[in-house]
Amino acid sequence: MSTLWTVESLAEAAGMSRSAFAARFKELLGQTPLEYVTEWRMQKAIQLLERRDKKLPEVARLVGYESDAAFSKAFKRVVRANPGEYLRRGLKDQNRPKQTTISPDNVRALSGLPRKKKCGVHRPCGRGSFDRVV
Image (cartoon, rainbow, N blue to C red; front, side):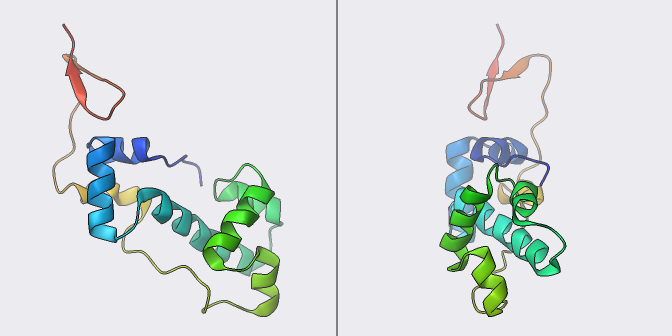
């Protein structure tokens, strides 16, 4: 994962405020953006782990975790088994996070509106909306 996904960055990509984005996201997907991104990361991690060509710290880093301990804790919370147990027990289908209907790369679809364009008259205010520069 080369992008750090935050509610703020996802809201900006969707051209919405953080609060409007979070509310619309939960309305459409039934989970918060953080829950969604965590499950998406775990789906990617499962794919990497099942290939068995990377060590745990590398998988953790590739899916956006700075430490394998933080990754293992999140993995166990979502998948209900730590990465080693998951692979040893062959829990492939029964504990896999549910497949989601969109990827974080497609968050713009949440708003249903065309993307906002930035111009020289406006600047980002840091809250996902735009203030007029006076």
